[in-house]
Image 1 (cartoon, rainbow, N blue to C red):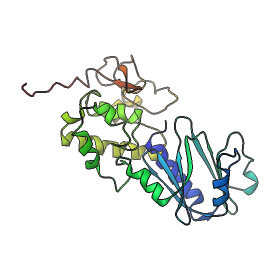
Image 2 (cartoon, one colour; image 1 turned 90 degrees about the vertical axis):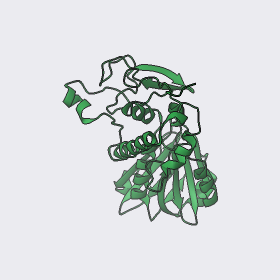
Image 3 (cartoon, helix red, strand yellow; image 1 turned 180 degrees about the vertical axis):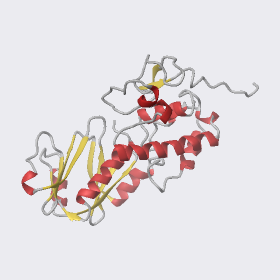
Image 4 (cartoon, one colour; image 1 turned 180 degrees about the horizontal axis):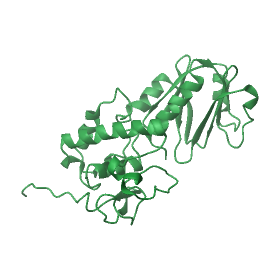
Amino acid sequence: MPEGHTLHRLARDLTSAFGGRVVGVSSPQGRFAAEAALLDGAVLEGAEAWGKQLFVRFDDDRFVHVHLGLIGTFDVHADLDDDEVPLPVGQVRLRLVTARPRAAYADLRGAITCALVTAEQRDAVVAKAGPDPLRPDADPMRAWARIQRSKKPIGALLMDQSVLAGVGNVYRAEVLFRHRLHPQRPGNTLRVGQWQAVWDDLVELMAEGVVTGRIDTVRPEHTPEAMGREPRKDDHGGEVYVYRRTGQPCLVCGRKVSATTLEGRNLFWCSRCQPVFRSRAVG
């Protein structure tokens, strides 16, 4: 499933291609046809992301709410000549098109959510989400209020979109490694300073992901160039410490990376760099 940086990058691209312009809206597949007819010829004001939720804003306070899910894609093609806009191919649920002098089109496929909603409905979706590290208005203490009261593993809490919006399996695994936190450590055993450091790191890492379009989490001393190793080969892309590196040597200590499942999702960590938490409290 795309992580939050992907949605923010997509919102940026949609706003750049269509923001402030009259757009043609259609549903070649047909599943969004009635809603598309209501929006066809309207002004697309912009797009924004909140975690893994995307909202495309049209005039009169109308929003298309998109959640890509596991297989969804929203491909944006900008700065084209009119004759370069092809006919839709495959199961395109939503198509956006603009004309000269700067033609563009975008095709949505495979999303689990594509719905026309009001501002109130959009606000209701946002109200259920935790703070998003990529939003300047985010308050990390909202997430901390949940974490400090919970006995659930921090590895599970980071993936709970009602606690923290936008973090997926890659950022979860990597930020915990970078801060030497075992993913099974209960949330209520963290100190507020540890949480603030994790949050600040997510802000920086995810912002870089928006710029580059990939997830790179290794520090300068652990890059392929610095270590004289081969770059990572994986369809995910990016240089990481533990994500999808089961059985491979840790880039820091050399111990084999461990893996298990937590709440149905794969979990990766280094048992030496991220030791099991043991409370010092006297029972």
